[in-house]
Figure 1 (cartoon, rainbow, N blue to C red):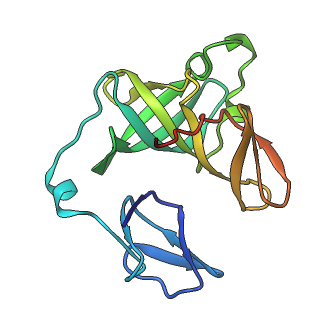
Figure 2 (figure 1 turned 120 degrees about the vertical axis):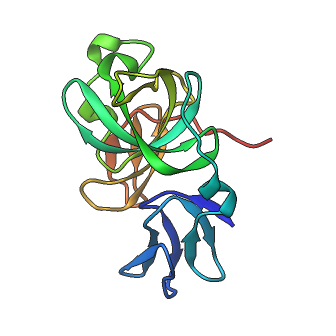
Length: 181
């Protein structure tokens, strides 16, 4: 069983189950939770439903980009320190918090797109409605994206580009992969 996020392709060529939808030949998760390949379903483990997890300063979060503008990206936080949250929290990544270097050259639209899944660090509890996040480290940034043109899943090719299997490339602020050792 694997942790999955909304919009993530979880299977192919099989009937979909609870917490998933079928798009063409793909089964896509509609919620954050644990994917059971035998049932093709995504469910919350009981432990997650009963546990209230709140982001704190220093927490690593996974979030889906919901909207962008020239000054910031707004995200919905669904995983805090490797624990799924039952409720989503809103977060904001300001343009100056996207990269550690060349901050004056950063453009939000070249770093994130709505629907991207981002690994970020909580730097402030924010303004009462949103947590303030940063991706200004090599291990932080976009970890999962679909092409806005072709709809295909994209893979990082360097620190600022992602590419589909068919070769279409888009700009993103990519997170350096974390390899289990």
